[in-house]
Amino acid sequence: MAVLVEAISVIVRISAIHEKFDGGWLAFLASCPNQTLCEDHKLVRVGFMEPSDVENYVTFLEDQGLCYCDSDGQAIDIIVIDQLRGPAAQCDWVESGTIPLDGDPKRKVAIVRLKGDSATVFIAPENWVYEESLSCSFGFVPSEHKDKSLTFLTHENGCDVYLNHLTDELNYIGRTKTRTVSSKP
Image (cartoon, rainbow, N blue to C red; front, side):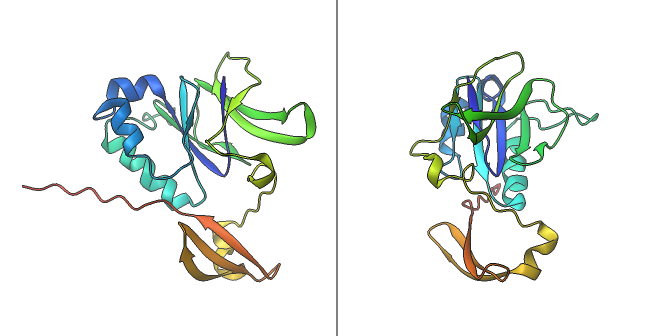
């Protein structure tokens, strides 16, 4: 099997969650910061639209016992995969690419699967619909251009809402719940 990759996806080996994550699989599920989780029994994916949310989540996962990369930059338990750019680190345990949805070459979906798996079927989050997805309609604003072309308007329903000065349209960037971990004496 394979899992969907949209926007910026954090992919984790399920075996590592069972072995290393503080509290195991159920604690991992309970800590998921948004509704984008999907899994194929080997890999689990959580998606983000904002790089700082990805960084915070990876740090959280590391604090719970998982390892992102070793000293050589090789992914160990976690790999971050950008829908357009691919993996953010070297990773010898996954392969990513695109597949046509329902055999239609005009409707491509980015996926990731364990290396050596030949799956052309993928798992998406519950209630995912292609026509309403980032796979169908994807907009990207590099971080260095965000302040120049977007004006923040408000935060509603888990999204930051911006006015795009290039298109005069509203853009919605999904945000995750902020998770604060404090240690008490």
